[in-house]
Length: 276
Image (tube, rainbow, N blue to C red):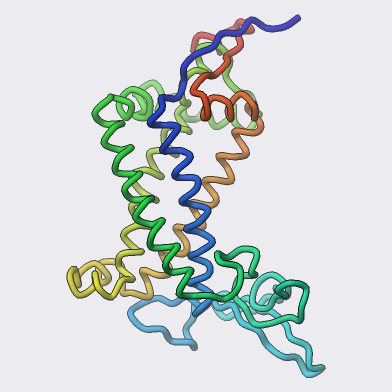
């Protein structure tokens, strides 16, 4: 027997537009950022780049047999990552030294100048999109009404974690609003991770360093800013991966349709979940 359903208007147009523009920006920014990283595939802490004190280093080495191997070095420990990191093939050719493989960078071939152009253009699109959405969310009450956790939300964190671990997802009225873990993760990205990525990106700019010299120092130096930028970016990737996973397990088509059209179907099957 089919469960009773009801359609609700879950995502307003500004939310949907900002969501898809953010998705586009992230893809371009990450891939062009890896292109820029490949120009010097190492991370350090402080103001200077000291190869002897690299925190992370992607490199290629030649074995005694004359083979090229890709190596990922983390805090002095080497891991063979041939074919993916350090050394990879482009177009099925020979292994060549390259931090990240061509399929992960934009543009594909080694082209630093074009990668920087893509990166800086979409970085400003990302910032302006974020500021525009933030202003709309504040003025229209979306932030306070839909994203800010209430006292009862915070008291239910433990239950929400257990429900997520058990893949027990809300139905009915509870499915029409964000749960507390969604709210906290979205707020963490909006007010924490995204601003951190932007600030560390700006701290690496020589032009901005001359205007705001205290910013790189606040982050521990330009190389520290580059390292934090790299780590924060992959934390964002982790958030996106978790987001996509939850979208899939809670109803791929229903969730995708709602972020395209705004309309979301909720099902009622009785019990406390329907009114929670």
